[in-house]
Length: 232
Image (cartoon, rainbow, N blue to C red; front, side, top):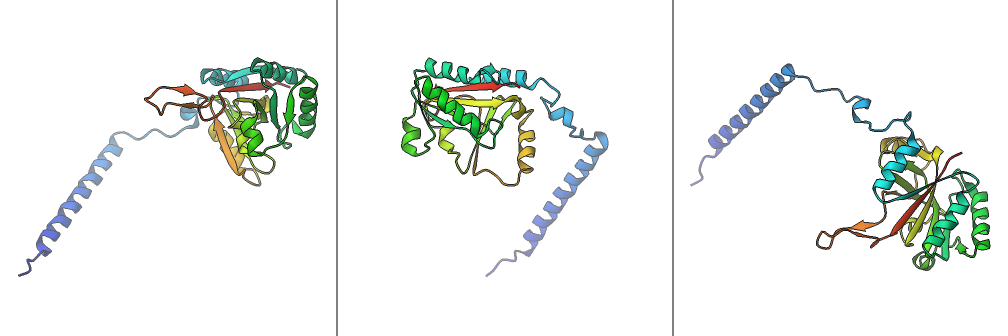
């Protein structure tokens, strides 16, 4: 004999309707007592374009373990040599985006300078080169002042591994590439004709705490990340 289930179902539907009506009444009461604050830009932004972006970036980057080196257009290559010597680096991958403010001419000049100083620079981007290199020098797509983050992209002629595989990463950032926060970078990205194949937001050297919660630096990527911050 089949039991008549229509009455319990009707009762459940009625209880659900009563519950939803009660929620609606409570929400109306809440809205009448206090309105939610408007999401104004000044309430969510920590850094704005009028701030001293190089100083804010340097403070944030240093706090997460990046080493920032202020430089001028005339001495930034000398600083890179000093950084490489500090880490006893010899084989060096050089990957500068020709569309970046530095451009192809700077990449050629840097390679010549490194060779003259006794280093072994290469623009090869195959896996064997990237895994065996002592260091990599790259340009960036942008740098985020709020968090001290550098943004490295990949695409034709730009290998993702250049900023992720060698134990020392030297990123060249021009102050004109600084943006206040991450939203500004993505706004900038949205205005571009095409998107990069990959975007890496790098905040500090590689770290992991997977094993027993113990923080270890440099396990899955560069142990040392330097930023050469070039002012005009």
